[in-house]
Length: 80
Image (cartoon, rainbow, N blue to C red):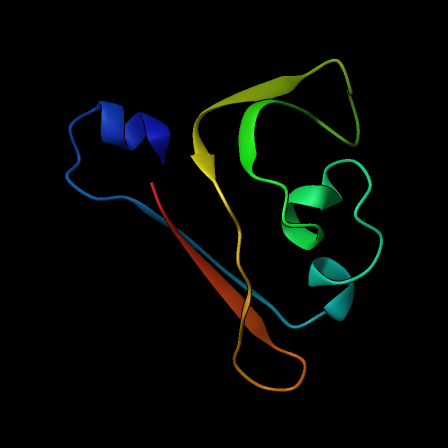
């Protein structure tokens, strides 16, 4: 999404839906802190599975806030 903004897209959004509580609740260690612990998504993020020598750099600073749809479904929208 950041690359689209750099390519002069006027708006870019990341939208996620989750129907599994383990995605947005539980242990907030490692990468899960962004999705469960309120840690802002920014900087270098190491790949948590497979070839863990790979990483992605997030230039912006994004707080992921889950909103309820129903008892077990939540969503988040992040404007880039």
